Length: 186
Image (cartoon, rainbow, N blue to C red; front, side, top):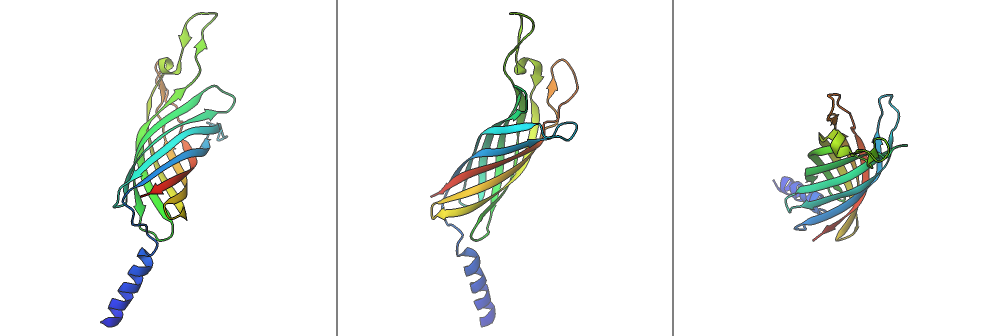
C-alpha cells in the first residue's frame, strides 16, 4: 500500500511540477505565414497580417478572437477572416500545449475598381457575399521567464462558400496560417 501511495505522489509531483498555477493568461499573436492553394494546386497566398487574441481562465479553457488578411499574389485582393475561438490548454508539464476550434466568416477585401472612366465604383462588399469559415488550431508555448511564454501556432481554416452576389459559383479560400505570440500569465 505504501508503494502505491508513494508512486501516485511521485507521478503527481512530476506532472504538476512545472504546470503554472496562474489565475488568468492573456495572449497576443501575429501571423507570420499563410498558404492558400489555387485551383491548379499552386500557392496563391502572398503573406498575411492581423492579430490573434486569447484569454485563458484558471481551469484551462480559453476564449479567443482572430482577425487577419491574407494577400493574393499579383492582385489587390485579400481574404479577410474573422474568427471566435474556444480552446483548451492540455495539462502538460514544461510546455503550454493548446488545442482549439473557431468559427466566423471570410470575405474578399479589395481596393475599389472603376467601370470605365469615372463611372460606377465597385467594391468587394458590393460584389461578394461573406462566407462562413471554421478552423481548428494548435499552439505550443515555451516559458521564457516565469510570467511570460512565447508560442507558435498553426491554424487550418476551411472557407468554401464565398460567392458573388450576381451568381452562385462558390469560391474556396481555405488555407493555413502560422503565427507567433506572447502570453502573460498572472
